[in-house]
Length: 425
Image (cartoon, rainbow, N blue to C red; front, side):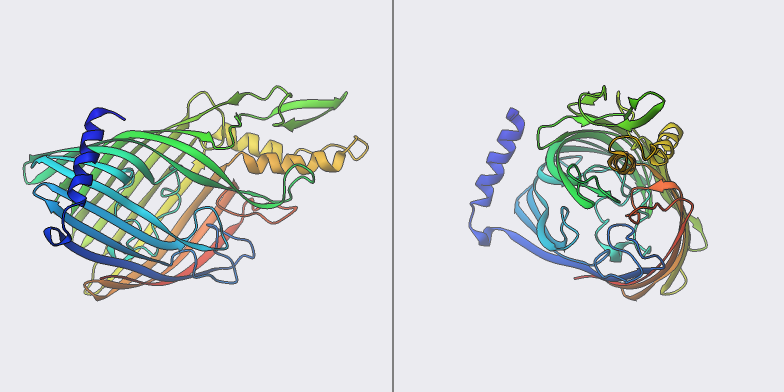
């Protein structure tokens, strides 16, 4: 541990040992009860299907802020929501837990479990009452391998004209899970259905944010290096193998010439803005591009959304368009692998053909866009009702959809209807 971080943590622990009456405690909380239903039998965004679900958007959280001493504070946030490594259970988890120190008014140092300052609404993305959409556009808000990290951040602020400019620098590590879905599986090699794999992520980056009244702008660059917790390497682009002359198929098995990497190094660059246009109309937009260094995986992609919303009394109707699309060569590779079959007379043809769909699923390809129309209604200054209809169009495929066994979801549309109640206290 570097010396400044060690000193910061030791000082913070000493302050935490002070008598409770010396602290100024503030307890708050927030939650959402949300229901969503689609017109398709398969799952979208983990939980949404034609049976309807409360699990996609519902959560409950409590936050404790403690003023420990002049220029020292601590924040803890506990959230109860669907588990990050299971679709069948809920679990409590520590969302935030950090010490803060302000050596001067324009400097802020924090250490502990923190939120990555990537998205425009990063710090409030779980607080449904803080935004008008039924949910933040998944096309953009799914691009990072982790939202939180255990480490340190430094913020420097400047007064600029009538606003404030701030620069965030952060570094840290975390252990999380990635969700993968195999339509059919491969008997003896891969089970069909859900699989959660543990990964260790090292994250670092810079984010520059300008705030002026209610307007906000952000640009940033972020790097995440992910390693599999089981110690195995990542398989890169699948390669063609030929079991018999004139017949070939794709493989990611070791020993077939597939490139491997110990770490998956991802770079994300983003830009975002939320500005008033006059007449109670606001424009929101976020754009991000992510690339893997020295790898040809399907997560190389671009994502963005553009929204308009207008406040009219307690009502705020909105419209947005969002997209998430993998690089063209990866979409082409996905389609090729997904459609590859070998004749029945080839030894183990059934297993080989199943492996082609499993290999395609493992590429993590995204090709979709969404139109959403909805409204929020402010019941009180601290609570909102929301309703939304969203239509998502799938192109070549999308790893945000659990495709049916023996099939795929190419060129299909998914209609999702959402109703939710969000509050803070």
